[in-house]
Amino acid sequence: MLLLIKFAAQLAWGLACSLLSVPVSWVQLEFFRVHSYVVLGLGALVAGLAPLVSLSWGLTLGALVAGASYVASLMFAFGLARTGKTLLAICALAALAAAMNSWNLPTEENLVWVQALGESALAGLVPGAALVAMLLGHWYLNWPGMKLQPLKLLIGWCAGVLGLRVMWTLGWWLAAGEGFNAWDIFWLLRVAAGLIAPWPLLWMSWQTLKIPNTQSATGILYVVVILTLLGELCATLIGV
Image 1 (tube, rainbow, N blue to C red):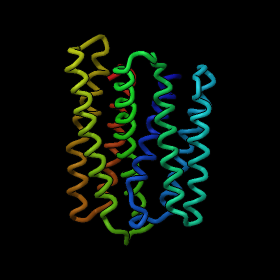
Image 2 (cartoon, rainbow, N blue to C red; image 1 turned 30 degrees about the horizontal axis):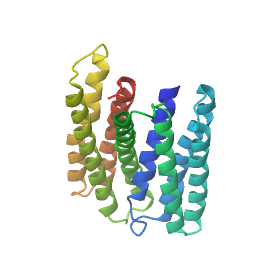
Image 3 (tube, rainbow, N blue to C red; image 1 turned 60 degrees about the horizontal axis):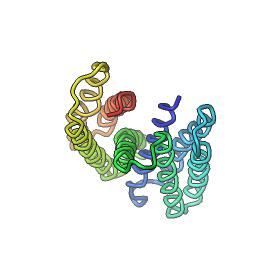
Image 4 (cartoon, one colour; image 1 turned 90 degrees about the vertical axis):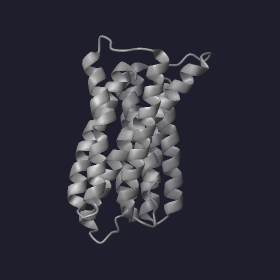
């Protein structure tokens, strides 16, 4: 249960941040309004599960994510883009705090806090960026005349956070000096699905946009979403 709370909070953080990375001048406000509800659902999940495991502040932070994302959706509906994005930023910070809260960290070990912060942030950003890119690819079915810049931006954003994730994970592995352990299958899935396989697929989706064919690029991004979610689920299980 605690792992599910952590994963939901991390994904809510990643989704909110990825939505913030898209300029409102490039994409219709309706896109932000609709997908604020996804963040709302994840926040509600955190708030609903936190009391079951006596997670301190989990209920409050999850409720803050859900509430702020709902108000953000209203702001986008009324055309108040700046206010909506400000509320999404509040959602992102509250979700990250909820993810950190699920670690139950000792207050005296600063290095553990640094690891938990980096792990929580990057574990949410990678699948969050892939998911928002895939959702934006679907948006072209509603607005076929929309320019390709926002989708290219999100694919680049996804590649950037994935690169940071690879460097972070490799750095902690080298620092710990650990190899295989009893969770070998999860370790292999974490590396293959979460850190290696998304790279050629992101390249393929980028190349597909040169045709241009947004539907094919979206289909490829579907696979990226599945792989990154699988990789980060395994990372949550084994702690790397």
